[in-house]
Length: 501
Image (cartoon, rainbow, N blue to C red; front, side):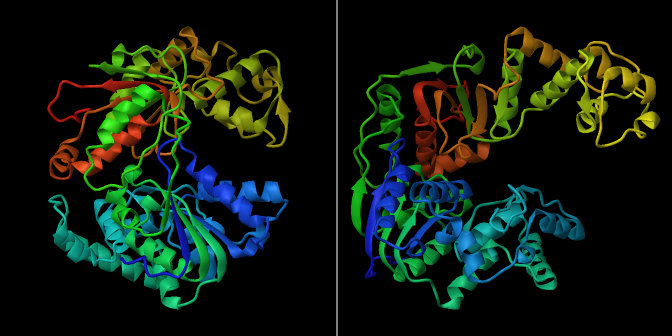
């Protein structure tokens, strides 16, 4: 795609890890806000969190309202609003599940919420391929022939693609690619004094078209990203467009996150990438630490905050098992740990035993973990807006015990009880967020931790891709190694299918 023939004054900001790329963009926004009407400034991201950060910072500093800055949005929200759509017109998780049920297939996925700009990420390989193909503006069947995916049936792909389009038409729905396509077809875009785009390396070809259209109607533009952190090719991202972008180039040269020793290792990794923008930046003043270990169980997690990274979701299961064996409190990405929910109920039970009256809603949570120790028939007679003490619950509403939690909460399995007792014994504070977070590398970009563990094991498919197209894998481990603020641990499993750091 040619993005060089614009009259717009374009500045490209390259932000290596920890150099404050988003912060720099927001500083530029603040300067424009001093002499530019807020509704003539656009700040566009793919991430809702990033869009909200820019919006909130501008509101706070310049005492604006959200209505004053209508173009601080995700790209999908921008299209949604420009097209005058309603939330009921957008495909959501429930619609994909309904379509799957009608077709007799499972269309699982994740969606942050039911809002119009919350993207649905499907785990179904057919829906994934269809979405990626459309992000590249390629017919799904044609894209199928360009990929090497023996797990997918061409006939089934054609059927699902046709049924998806039919379902949307029948129910008056559109999906996210539709939003962008319809906006591009509209031929109009608001005239802005300046537009900002963050995380540009993650944009797909169709999103680049959208950016181009907004940019054509703007006087100035600032496009920020880092091609070295372009790790979403599998999801349609087209990092080469960002690499080939023309304009005034600025590299942020100081990392405020990565210490020298992890920095040197990361620099060695990224230097292997053949197609990239050469850029020089510097680590923070401290040395940090790099240690290589054959197995995760050898690492001492007893102090500090940790991030444990793998290349695939299924590998996180064994990571969790090892951490459990060590009696450690951990969290999988942004999900609430199961033991946290259980511990909250245990705390409420202990408070109830101590004579503290409790609201019906909390008592209901306790009761959900009781079967033999609560008469369900009597429980139904409780008022839903009242508080109750333990004596009243025993006398009137079916509670049969006031024993310790591991005896009373009879719906807890032996494994849960052992796990929580071990965590308490090891001194873990279950009332706070876990010190240890585990995630795939793809799921953690933008996060950081003082201690980072990177496992180098690759799945069979990932190893094959590494052999054919090593640049993507180099970028992946570069991102992983630059998440650390202090110490980096490299797990080198005794297997041939691993990345060589």
